[in-house]
Length: 275
Picture (cartoon, rainbow, N blue to C red):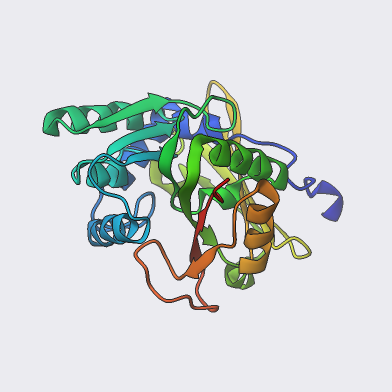
């Protein structure tokens, strides 16, 4: 019923989702699976993205890079192999532990911190900052504004910021719905057995989607609210300018593909203007 529709961005459970002991184990497995794009892009895309990011952002040995929501450090370690210092931050303790171990094994110049980038100090100054896998679009407009303000403050004058975004074209494929299944998504949400409910709410005026998962076990009931706002390049450019960035360059993805207005994603590169 329409009266049951939650207000946009009325709950935020992303940190709890990513750092849940069971879910984070499932997510790490997905991150590291080379055959799927469910958490990180596939290895061939990551390799191309690392090459393109380094070239497009003019990064090389000695550059300082901030990777926001770094997960298990796949992009960060790729950049560090090129001689950069990379700081990765993520709310998932499991992903940060993996990234730290991987960097130490290769003696890379990288550090990984368990941190909420909306609340914690980002450090700096950096030559570049990254926000990959459409993380921008799970945030409310107020959270996005806060994050962009923090990012620009962490960059040196002339420093670059790159991110990929869920596009407005994606919204056409989304529809309201509900499903209830035992062990929803094959045990992803909790140790089995459990009962899972997925409710999908769409908000056409905002091009916003909410997937609300209710997970019922013998001991507890938990909810996870996953928001996704589908944005246009003009909307993203307006938010970037509002935070003090210059005019963004538009591309298809973080591997440098051409922009396609029909694609479900796009990417932007922008710089902090020099004083």
